Amino acid sequence: MTTSAAARVYALGVDIIYADSLVAVNLIADYLLLLSAGRVAGAVLHRWRMLLAAALGALYALASVAPKWGFLTGFAPKIALGVGMSLISFGSERRFWRCCAAFFAMSALFGGAVWALSTLGGYDAAPGGYVPLAGRTLALSFAVCYAAVTLFMRRAAPKALRRTAELRLSLGARQVTLRALIDTGCTLADPATGRPAAVCDARAIAPLLGGRAPDGDAAGSALALSALPGLAGRVTLLPYSAVGGGGLICALRPDSAELDGRRVDILAAIAPAGLGEYDAVIGAEI
Image (tube, rainbow, N blue to C red; front, side, top):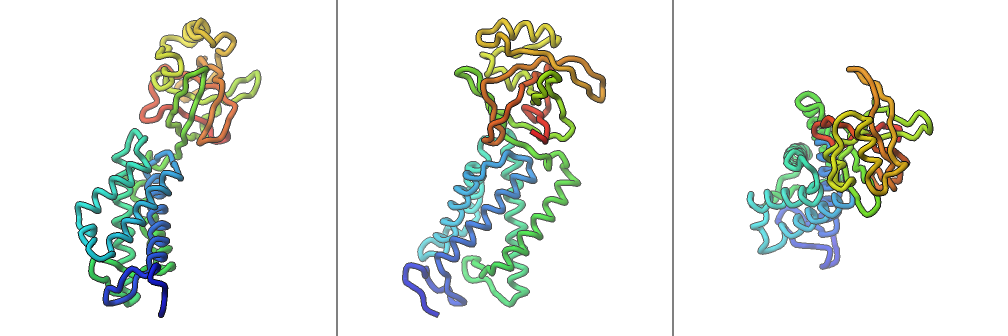
């Protein structure tokens, strides 16, 4: 077998490691692990950030098998890399450590699955822990660990599997970014125009209103908001129904709204009570 000197890193005694294959496989594997960790942890998925973190992991894998860089296979560098990749991918998440833990869990299961399947296939790990990884082994290992972690999360923490999105609202020179829960049961809309509405935590949306978080009854909140600069004619009351009853909720029309980067035409309804770990709730049809 021949290859260019640029594509070959060095021989470990049991095989030859090719830099291009090593980087490509680790890039794909790390991206899938970050994506899966984000999904099971209920994080907002920033795919370009995950790709950047995966590229860092791929370069680390390449450096760790190079001569005189074997110290990178130690415990401390691996932990530092995992936290760093999690920071790149999930650093803006309120529950960052949950995402980080999910990534470590996915990585550990994936590594164990790769080791087991490679051993069954007759491959032995080279010095430094490098295991030859075929495409079929990669796919099967990923499927096994994703199924295991998903099953565990469904039983131990079902809320973590809820779908979330990044909701960005703009009003004048102000802008706020909210972590929104996608809920099929949320059908709140303006009965006059049919425009759907996202239910937003009053404290989370306060920066959009100059730090003023409306409180009290819906009618009083609507009057107070209408008196603010730039909100005349933008405030309305929406009827809603819930398990505990129904009534009216105050809502405003922002200058613009984006859901995971996609422009949407919605109202921002303001919930006086908190929404738990989420900043907003929005219907799945939006």
